Length: 475
Ligand SMILES: Cc1ncc(COP(=O)(O)O)c(C=O)c1O
Image (cartoon, rainbow, N blue to C red):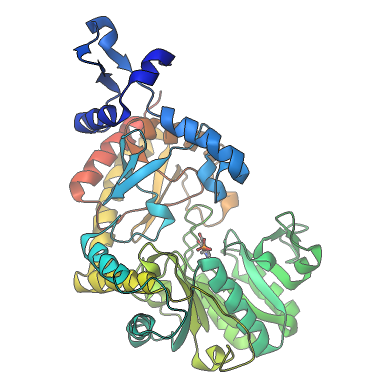
């Protein structure tokens, strides 16, 4: 319901927000105090739009940023409506600029293994801010994080820190091309690796021959020649493509847990077969663990699967919520990177001390409290119990470790997007807005996964389960 402009102007937004916060999540009806007295009861209790401030901020943002955002999915295009603006976050919760609280399963798309502003990480960040923000020179903080990783993750013999997952992938491909003297890279239909030009590709003339076509304006069509596209979950097809082009392929890159077009959990045998094929044909295997690294286990999917990739890329959890990425792997390959070798790659803010220390504090806490196994158990319990009610309503939740995906129910697992029941995006859109209205924030697209973090206590998960169950009921 729209609020008369005169009242709108007179509402003290701060007090209003505090009241909404006190009344708790999902309560929209508030008493409005004007000046010194209460309005007549008939008018004092009114529906105040939960999104008024977000709306006006978004119209300002549209003037200064393309689509009003700095990363496309934030614009709510796939769920419709206008994006919410958030002013703060703590633990498992987000607070909108209107003061509404939401249980957050987007978790900034994955970096927040411990939740927002974990107290231990906060302390380390504060401490670091008092020491330095950036050096552009050698410092001990990146050394400590690098040693922590190299000492624990056997397939990472050396690594280089960068500032995003995209940068990590782009650099790993450069190393692979340099070390093999070949130019082509194979990617899988249903995996995303950031906005690297040569990977913004889709299947060209279908998936039959592996040909790629550009998937974004501005990517040179010539680059499509550098990329081959393979199907997930079809080792025979993959073998055909690899064998037909082996002499020109530098590397195969895969999300070992594809989590960018839903959660397309692959069979272990498929990934083991892929690794064996790469070995047999002398093609490098790159695991893109930007989402799964330090999320599904300390050693990521490589550890879970017992597969040793030649190179691996990280982002998200490794920086504890700050802009950090990394690529690493076999020492002989990483020694191709400048200044050891001829592959140029550099970064002004690489190994930023705040990100390095936030990342290390996150990983140390996760290790100390055995958070990976505890979170997996907690999430499994939650998802299993939800599924027992969701199935009869035509919904299903996939899960791997602490990552989940809400989708339409199907008899068979969905390992490729083409196996997804039709109408998913539209059905998700309805559920997204229903749960949002009741105080649960899912990532604003039916193809994004959700994350359970250490801050999602069993009580919070119970509350979210109730809301999810109620929201997928027939309208
Ligand atoms: C698997 C994977 N690789 C690479 C990227 C790119 O990372 P960034 O957004 O930090 O550039 C993402 C981002 O979601 C990702 O999920």
